[in-house]
Length: 561
Ligand SMILES: [Zn+2]
Image 1 (tube, rainbow, N blue to C red):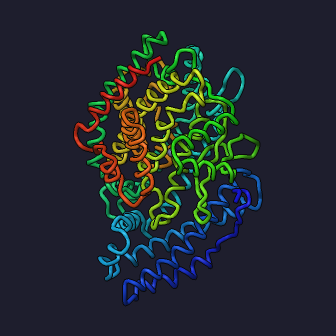
Image 2 (tube, helix red, strand yellow):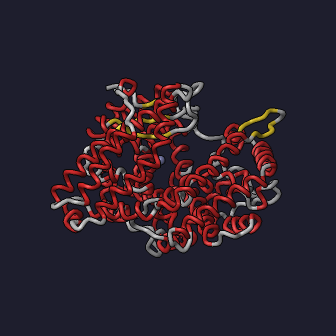
Image 3 (cartoon, helix red, strand yellow):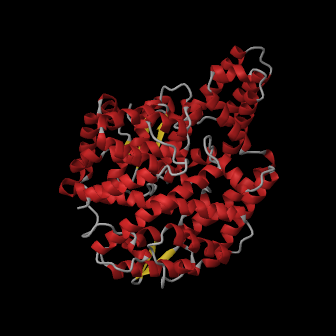
């Protein structure tokens, strides 16, 4: 069925309440494992209805943000969200505390129980008010950033429009872009510092109320992490510093010379290719190419892209009243993934049919999994492994998208992705410092950021850049305000994606089969186990990134155009 024709109905709180107030006591008072498993089936039934319809409402709102019907539906789900979450934790608790727990873990999945354990550790009645306050302050930040306007030659531009010039081929234009950005942010310095300071203290307070040492611990639970903790992330950080940072610094400095730049400045960081970024083919050509590509990859991926195209599961045209971002979601009951994007004629358009489609393919592959509703695609690091690896599996087909620019695209894509790892790891390191010492002053926080810049991006100078030279680059990295500890997942996934890229250049079919196997398991296995099964080392082990880094550097040397 076409996505536009999928039937929608509101799933009410009363309906959910009725099921949960039946299911939870049935689990608590069960005399056998079978009784509990039967109760779980009823839970899954209502959750499937809820997830599917809430996702439909949200999608229909994003394709037309002024549609009064779906605006109201979304508001309704926002409103009942915390109550539903609470029921969810109560349901999880009933299973976790069941005297039949050991048998249940065997009948279901130990990972499911691990995940419910972490879910329970991330929530408590005593912090509900703090959570509401946190959301409010996060909203203050996103409203502030959305309303911010920057003076560009007498024109007032929102940040997204201004940042187009950050990639301009003309160096003076890039410099001017960042001067304008810095001065614009500086006008809001007080609010940006104050909002962040409040967020840090609210989060620290929540963690302490729940008996944790600091917010780092709670932050990891909120991310639902099952296979790594802060010590492992510290190892990863060391690996990045030791084995990736020097290589990226060398590659980027050499690359800058190709662009005629001897003194690498922060405003040079957005350009890689002499002559500007490669330009992809038109929208219709992109979809035709994607169809051919997924069919060439295999039967399963061919069926997947046919389902997406036949059911019109892509909405990629920019238009008035459409939400400006991009995402991939699914309507679980109908086993239908969906992708929203706003094509703008850049390489980002191709990402929609590689990266986002990697997420969608995963949703398609796991649609019939036993724990699809509860464990989904796995943690964020696993989800991004699905998508970032697909970007690389698409490489042999890049001529279809970029014509004679295909080789330039590959070089740029790999160097950009590799350079991202030190940056992302630094964003994560900064948050560890901030939440370990919540009472740092704004100036002290900026000083910490500058120290990290010197460690993680030693090739970049901020000297002479208004405001940004004070160590404030983090203030427009929205994850730092909005989604604490989210960022490292991208870095972890990026290392896995590079492993798949290197493997695919040795034996594409074998690497792709390993990728499909990993994706097909969704969240039923934890990420480090999935990697092991795919034949890759855990990036948390000391020295684990040395070979990877050496091989990526050699690859980049060999494909430089
Ligand atoms: Zn993604």
